[in-house]
Image (cartoon, rainbow, N blue to C red):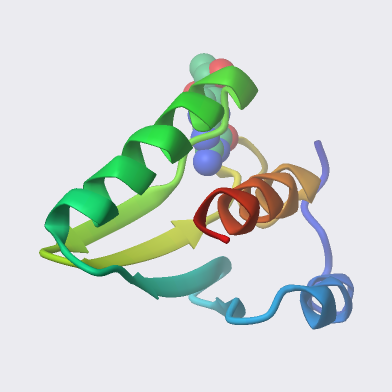
Length: 93
Ligand code: H2B
């Protein structure tokens, strides 16, 4: 899968509220009620990531979850990252 150009990424990001393009990846931070809610969402995302065979780079501190999405195999951001971002938004709502 081919990496998208910066212009293509910025154009597509117009439909992804809360996401930005930084450090060569799609980036977002989510705040939850508490750790349990954060971890529950991470578990749901993990199952979808496994189904897609496409995995986030993420860090969790208590009720906060920071996510970076990029395609290592393409050394950039691809459609797969936008697909996973869409699923994450649906899951977190
Ligand atoms: N996840 C992400 N984010 N980028 C990849 O290039 C990638 C992945 N490659 N998950 C997959 C796994 C690859 O390593 C396996 C071997 O298919």
